[in-house]
Length: 421
Image (cartoon, rainbow, N blue to C red; front, side, top):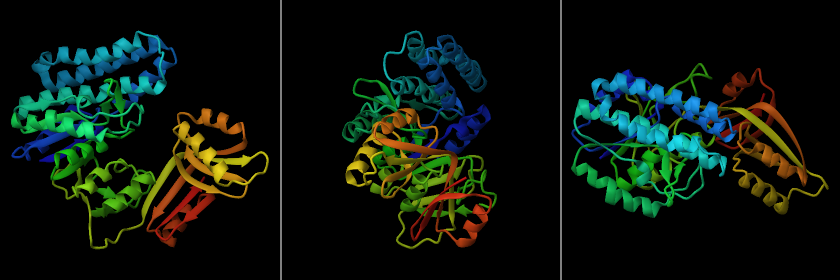
């Protein structure tokens, strides 16, 4: 049994959905679990709806949602033609989940409403595509993954209840393969024990695929992307990239941790634990070799791997009373970052100051700054970049840094990180 994951770009247009069908056709002789994201830009649109709703811009949020409904209606009608009527009522039942919210005043946290609203993107895309595949390839099963993946109530970055989820996979998901060879479900989402929707973190569909592969003892996972393979850098930023045909679990975790938009950082552990290989392949040309991610006892020689995180802010937190930044102060500072759910991308501390590089768009940044200001003086530099190079070479650094100012550097044998502008 294989697990395939298709991201938003791979289903953005009806032509790409038809292409997806041709890919699945080649593997129909064996069971397939197909994990699908919301179609391109849908999550961004739903995020705007959640934001305007929480800001009490009721009419705007409703207007934006009507536009999203129309967009999916046209998408479904183009793809399904006369069969659209077969799923129209089911689509309406998904829309109602958000309609109910938008017609009430918010009384809970933003993160809660974000998850209730944003989650429907995956439900809409998978319902439409499942019906299309049933028409073109034969019977498929569609399952609402919120009935299977159970989590805590840490909205926007929920933690999996592995025991309960595993039981539900075995009792509710696995038996569906006796009915058909293709099961369609959603990435990115789950639900709490109170059946409130949750999300697993941005780009969490990869993680969903890995969780299900682990619990189903899949032979492999394939993530279908719009690039020929993993590259050593983002080609939109760095002009001279090279493909990586083979890479270890460990190296991919490092890349993801430093911000490479390749694989969701949590994806690897469930696969590594059961030694399930992960393939990255191109949905635009299914014949290309792609990249194999696995455990390797043989050392692999890598090119320099470059990662540039944009929109970074450098915070300098200094004690007001000139006390040292030792364990007590570090503990206090870390707890404040944690309470505001702000991830630190790079840290460094001196005698009386603590420096942290964070994402500029962190949702609770203002709250963090307010909490820090009670005990510390806080300065910040904005509009920065965090530049990371794995397996670095001096000539690469010279070339990439020749027009940049370096504000902070950290270096190990394998990795160099610099905050630059």
